[in-house]
Amino acid sequence: MGLFDDDFYSTKVSRRREQKASKQPMPRGWSARSKSRNLSTLQISAISSIISAVVAVLLFSLVTGQLTHDKSVLPAVIQNVKPSSGDPYDRIVQAAAAVRPAVVSIINHKEDTAKSQLDESALGSGVIYKKANGKAYIITNNHVISGASKLEIVMVDGETRKADLIGADKVSDLAVLTVNADGINTVAKMGDSSKLQLGETVIAIGNPLGLGDTLTSGIVSYTNRTIPVSLNQDGVYDWEQEVIQTDAAINEGNSGGALVDLNGRVIGINTMKISDTGVEGLGFAIPANHVEKIAEELAANGKIVRSYLGVYSMDLNNPYVPLDENQRKSLNLPSSVTEGVVVLDVVGPAKEAGLKLNDVITKFNGQTIDSTISLRKYLYDDTKVGDSLVITFYRDGVEKEITVKLEQKPEE
Image 1 (cartoon, rainbow, N blue to C red):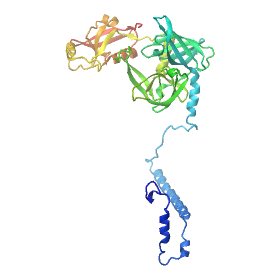
Image 2 (cartoon, rainbow, N blue to C red):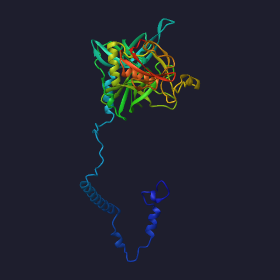
Image 3 (cartoon, rainbow, N blue to C red):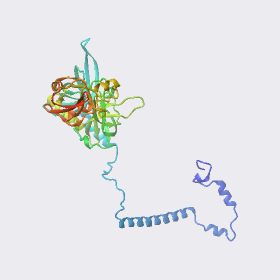
Image 4 (tube, rainbow, N blue to C red):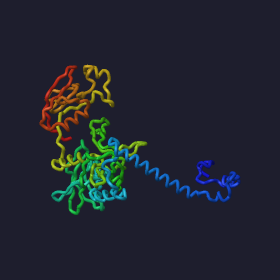
């Protein structure tokens, strides 16, 4: 019997039915001899299979014949499919083996100023991305090495080496270290993060919770996600980080480690995750193309040179600290002006050019500026030190323009 008490769901005939069938009288004119000549079940199945096969061949010939004559109807084809290499996990094994020796654990020793001794340390990860002049260069996150009095790396074989900080950048959250290159034979190959595809398999290698040389895997959940961040850690978003989103497990200590594709190339530097109750699988990495550019400048100059305007501001439409009705009235803005940046203080180039408190900036060189984030992104991405910047702003309800000569951003 089947799952239900019904012979329809059963692959066998019940004995009761067999017994009933055996007691039924044969129709008139039938004999026992004629009954014995009936085809067996096996024979009937064989004949049915042959007939089905013939019908299927005829139908296939008919359909393919129509497709041949009708060129507008073509079978669906999935493009760019590569043949399987056998074991689907073999490529993960090979990619991990290629990159693992180039991924190091980083120990950030922080000095207790009250005791004047090293008694606190933080853990992170880094990637050896080049060798030159007897030194190996390691890329990691700025927040991994922040506040360090002493830096050490731990190689994949457990060897510990002293590391020197060459340069760090708070905005991109990247830093470059160097160590003695003796005995270091593996350098990670950087990939092209612009060619990443949604759903592509990736692996994360790093030092989560001090468990060095840890490997996790997942997929690319989003190729170019924009995440708001607070550069000053004051709870107000003032920058946007472009990142690769992945569901590969990334935990504390993974920061600065490698996000690797199945070709064994580093396509990102793991930098953060979203951690909250009921949230999982939301990890982020800085794209390799951006990392390479920043790393080379840090290695050459020890810092990233950016344009400086000298404006401290807040958004006209700040969702976190909204302006009240009286504050808006004091700006005396036309009703058509709903977005812009309110100047809170000015120094340097902005002060010299004549910007003042409560001026509302709306454009840079004719391009709309609707937030502090867009103001910074324009300065950092679209200008260089020494450029002249045309600022459109409102003062007491009147639209004005001034030209500012940008200077180099001072050290913080």
